[in-house]
Length: 355
Ligand code: PMP
Image (cartoon, rainbow, N blue to C red; front, side):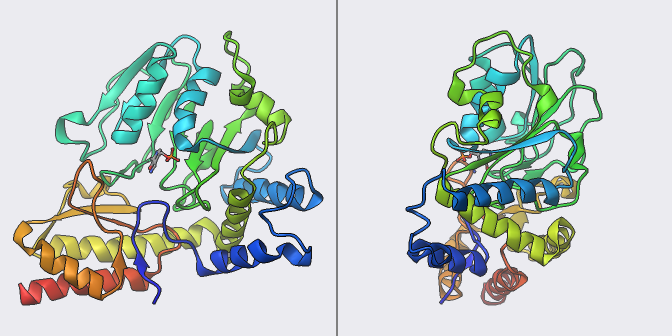
């Protein structure tokens, strides 16, 4: 039986994506070759990556606006290093909203001058902090749009001339935004883009070429752009699954359809968390709660084993909180159906009933 997969990433994918990916592993498009065997220089793969690049921009409404798309290695974490290498000359700002934002800042500090423009460290990152520092004279401002571990999400973004660099690993393609307000967007593919193994980077080309340091070629965005993400062998299979997933997304109605579904799912779950006396959200400010990752606790931990049994019996998978915070986390990425959230809400109600 297919499980209700609330895992934070790698996570649920649309069935159509893994069906097609499975077929392609056996024989890609009746070519007599597995997708795992095709050369990245082959016509077949060039078509795949070009279509994926195009769709990545089209879905965000960013076509013909000066953006370039890269499919890279190294996960979102490698971008924590590549971004300062490519963009940091004098000073950059980081908003410290959680574990990943902190890691991004820590790496950047090894490379140059970084200021923390705001932080929610005082309350275990359970809210989105205000920006308390001037954003003037910064090479860029780094933000994490969705904090996967603690379940907070930025709903508005600063209006500033400073370039905005945003880690959207856990909420890209999930909601309507004016994406042209951002200068660089990056996301590890393994949530709303595709499978682990590639990282999507969307960068305004005019941002590049402004630093004086010598950048290792494998980390130089301009070199990677000039080589169309094929400076070295790209992660072929992961780019292929990203294409399948982006195509699925478009077929569903694109981001507006995702937003509609995602807000319905989030509303259903948060309503239960707030109304069920056994549970409590770990993000008290409703307007800071993530539509992708809902984090919550059982007020009485003695009920944990009963809740675990109910989860197991209903095929609910992946709701254990991140190892650094504990509690529960239900990740509701694009591919998670409403019926899975209903199944989770049902067992929460059942726990309340049996106590
Ligand atoms: N940023 C965010 C917001 C994340 O959620 C994650 C991983 N869950 C990362 C960065 C790190 O991604 P990766 O494992 O691809 O390096």
